[in-house]
Amino acid sequence: MLKLKKNEIEQSKLEINNILDNNNFFQNILLKFKEKDTTAGVKMYDDKALIGKPLIIRENIATEIADTLTRAEKFTKEVIFYHMYGQAGIGKNTLVKRAASLLKRKLMTIDLKALKDNYSKDWSNTFYDIVSKNESSEDILCLDNFQMFFDKGYENKRDAFAVIEIVKQYFRTVFVLSDNKINDKEFEEKYFWFSENIPDLSSEENFKMWQRFMPTIKDMTDEKPEEIASKFSFTPKQIEGTIRFAKKEYLKNGEKKLSKEQFQKCAYSQVISTLGEKAKLITKKYTWDDMVIDNKTKLELQNACERIKYKYKVYDAWGLGDKHSYGHGLSMIFYGSPGTGKTMAAQVIASELGMDLYKVDTARVVSKYIGETEKNLREIFEEARKSNVILLFDEADSLFSKRTDIKDSHDRNANIEVSFLLQQLEDHDGITILTTNKDQNIDEAFNRRITFKISFSKPYLGVKGTDEYSENYELIKGLWEKFLNNGKIPLADDIDYDYLTTHFNVTGSDVRKAVTTAAFLACKETSDKLCFKHILNALKTGLKKRKDDFGHEYHTFVDEIFKEK
Image (cartoon, rainbow, N blue to C red; front, top):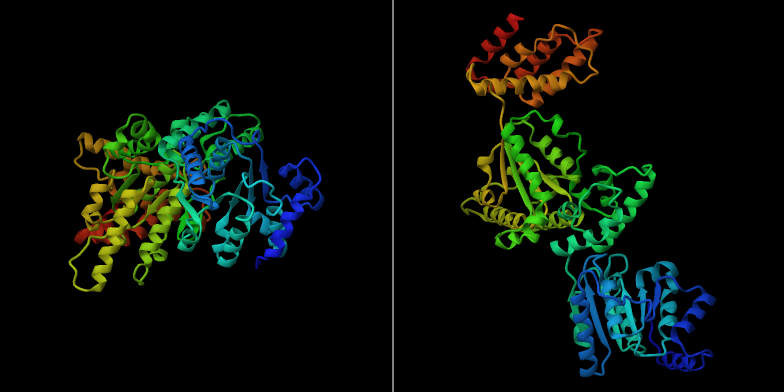
């Protein structure tokens, strides 16, 4: 616990006057650090060390801060506390250094968390020892990571006030930095306290930062700033970290250009995600070559990808973003029968864009307790935004179901949850994919907010002799060829692709399961090759589980097929 003693404060002031060198505060403190090795968490900047040129972004904010402090110092004789909060890496320290430069003042920054981590129980004495040596009240102090006093595991408001009481004895202007807003009016009531939120980068600011750093690795990757900016909305610190990591990967890669996947790795190295608590990271196994779908569906999926690749150019550079009522995110609904490739399509999109894909665990999100579901959803969307990932809501009708007439409290709460989810989807600037087998169960309000609604259907052959028949024939045949001709399965010469194509109403999932089952049957018979009979037997087993697909004629249909063969 920090303790304030007036006699100690007065004694420290006397000690300052007895320091025997050229009366330079920063030199004195450096000498003291050298003797006691107390530099951890403390940085000092003179006029030359500060940022003396305009910032790439947010120069206006730094200027406004400097102007506000100038006016405040004329207005009051009280110590001025300027509290800035915003996510880690957003540039709070940079703004402080630039503001100090504009004010032509020296600056000391103390990372409270680093100081505590390095000096443990003795950190408070070390802190007091550092601060009490300040010779000039004109110097500016910056207290970083002030939120540590309110974090779980520490939670000591008394220490927070003790720190403030100490520094006000030696400094005229103090910056207080935290990742989150300090929700305590006591500070504002007791001190001359400003509080300002430093927001996340806008699309334009994000692009400017990528544009600033990408030329430094232009020979290392083919990625373009506008495409990267559309996919990764990062803090300045994360962007710098990505570029630094990319340079290292480039050297490890034998000075060969980094692939999309390699650059993605560099970007995600800067992300610390907690999504794994309520969502599962999906391993991306598929690309466009793995998908056997009709041309219309494939084109719609490709158009969706283009929305992300050129989002910055269209919405920001060309100014069309202001014309949209909702957010600039991409939302899609994939609907259709089970096994038609909806989840596979989500993986393909993630692979194409070079982004991570997280499948939301509905069981961990939905809660019987009032307000808990909304809280979980808010956390998921917020974390997805920070992590720059694609959210996949599989079997989305369980969450996005139609609102009903209110008959009881359960109906009321369910409707509130749907309305809240609708709002989150509207505001989200990232990518959200919903999959459902029954799109008619989805609330109509979602359809108006959805960017792409894409149908996935079973490939029915249709009428023989028509263009539709020819196209679907090749499509269904392609499914069988895709799974059977992988270059590794030893196939017998009797595989009848025409028979498989024309006699079985199957999805891609059905084909995959049938081929896998057939392979096990072949191994069971100690066969050196997978034969046509193995596929037929695998299908016979699988079709029994899909009786509803064939109606009243199911048994006749199955018997006739297998009698023929």
